[in-house]
Length: 564
Image (tube, rainbow, N blue to C red; front, side, top):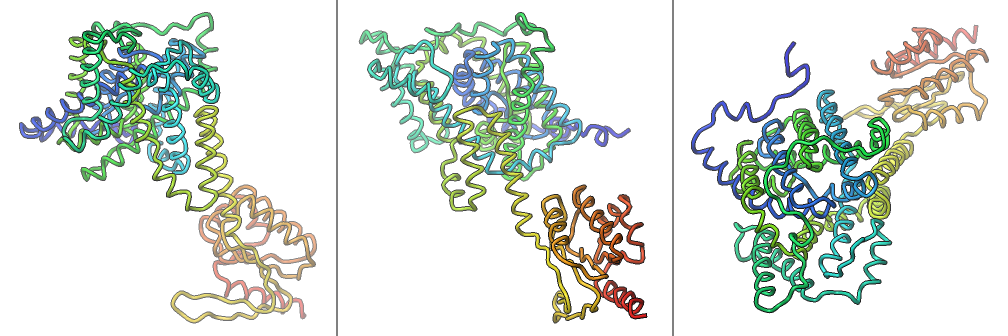
């Protein structure tokens, strides 16, 4: 059996190594070093913001980044922890602890692998865009709201998880603002904003961390300012690679824990799939390549199965780091491998320096991440679109902020489907015609057909599914019908089970009253459906025709029989 036809697993690394040369290697190494430097503050910040720590963030970037590059379906994808997972991870830890997070991440990895094996990579791309914009904007707002304690140095030991309660808590502690901390945080934000104007080669977040770490050290050493908290004040610093460890379940059984965590795992898997495939699609447009969605999902899945055994958190493709890789010359997965080596060296050799990074500076980095994630320009643009899109967008956004991402995506999807069905129903028309029928010809003059006196035409203009089928049934029952009933189905592209059922009821009721039903303009797909359901046999094959001219002629033949 061909491997591709069986599971569609073709890591891009294998193809890239065939014609690899020194020039490509030098570009990949340079890009990998730069992306690794860019990833350092982000991995640390995402780890801390998720409720774990800097070590866990770096470990995730190392293990997941390596596996995604080696096993993934994109040449330039850079994987690791991202801001999109912060809200979910924090909530899982609050409710189930670190062991629950590890189980949820492994389950999400298995789901991703199964999605890739069953070739569902392309289906993920059909997630409605207003939902993606909505939950991304909601996550951005939530990330922003989680950083106020560190930005202002309020010193709140336990910040509520709920969005509303969180802000109430902030206002209650507004008198405990540490202005030194706020100054460091504000300076970090300004550095990130203005660094591109000074040098586009130096990442703003890295410049902010280096400068503010130096400023904080100077303030503590020479000005006696000890109120600015650093990573080392709150977290155990990285001191080497973590050992392999099994997730701790606590008192609950594995099966019970998995049952409780399944919705969360599914959300992590869906979010990871959407974010990674969107990132890969954007990258394709820049480098002129085409990623393999199913291979990418399998690679992402393997990464998420492995990282929890080393204390890591959920990971996916990171569009900012991926674009940094492309912009600096990275063109093969080797650049992603080099980026993980850089992170590994930081974890092993620079743990002491990591501990000196001020928490307000990390808050500033994450606030800028949330700003870039928010997509406020896209939201502003979408507000000019149809009201249904705006409703889905803001419903998803608000539910993400006030409740959680799982509820937001579920409700958003249901709303999008219902509104889509409503739009189809509104665009599908059913009309009853007598006496005369206009036949439209492309590029030619319209033709007028005379409908026999004993016949009438029921024209269905659009898909024949449950909502339209009910409308058709109600319309057909509201009046006294003529002996010959022609159902014109030339624009019925598909018919669902409800449509088949209602059409069958229509045919049976007509036959019981001695009426003849003629089906006109039936395409091949719809014909197979009505044949399997027994409708063709009931109306007779001679009364199932592919064109209205034939249907009118058949009605005329039947009318002659009435006259006799």
